[in-house]
Length: 293
Image (cartoon, rainbow, N blue to C red; front, side, top):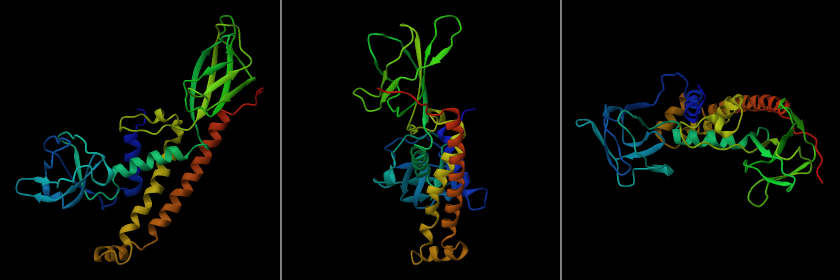
C-alpha cells in the first residue's frame, strides 16, 4: 500500500513518543461533532481534563468536563484553537487530552520537511510534447520546473525509441508558467519526452499519497526524520526552570538538554539519509549537459 500523509504523521509521532508508558490520555466521540458545536459526548470523560484537547487536526479548549453525563463543553472561542481549523468529526473519532505532540504541528513539520529537502532532492515529473516546426517555445504542465533532466524525441517507426535532444533552454519563470525552448526537434508530429525537476509539493489531507509531493518513495524516512527533529524542541519547553512546580518536578526526571541531544541525534540521521537519497536520485536522473542559444 502506498504511503499517505497520515502514515507519515503517525510514524513521526511514533519516533517521538515510542512505546513507553507515557502515552496521551484519550477516548472517542459517541456522536458526530459539527464545526459550531460547543458540547461533545465522549465514551470516557474521565480521560479528558480542562485545557487543550485534540480531535483529528483540530485543537479545542475544554472549559468543563461532566463525568456524570460523559460530556465536555468548550467556550465560544474553544473551537479551532491555537490556529487550527474547526472541522466536522464523526462518531468514533479519537479525542486526545493535552497532546504532547499535536497532529496539527506534526503535519506542519512534515510539510516543512518536504519543502526543505529542495534543492538536494527534487520532485520529478514526466510529460510529452508534440513536435511542431512552427514554434520553439512550449509551455510545460509542470509549473514548478526548475531543471531539465531529460529531453528526447521519438523516432519514426515501430521501435518507439527516443533519441536524446541536447539543444534546448528552460525558462522556469516565463509568462504563463515554465517554458521550454527547443532548438532541435524530431519529425513533426512525433512525441518529445521531457523530464523535469523542481520543488516538491506539500500535502494537505491524511489520504494524500506521499508520491503526490513528487519525491521518490525512498525519501519518506528523510521527511519523517526531518519532521521529528523539528518537533523535539517541544520536549524542552515544559522543563524551563520556574515555569511551574510541575515543570520543576518533571525536570528532575528528564533534565533540560535531553531533548536537545535527541534533536541532534535525529538531525544527524536526517542528514545521513538525505545525502544517501540525494546521491541515488542524482545517479538515476543526472542534470544532463546541453546547448542553449
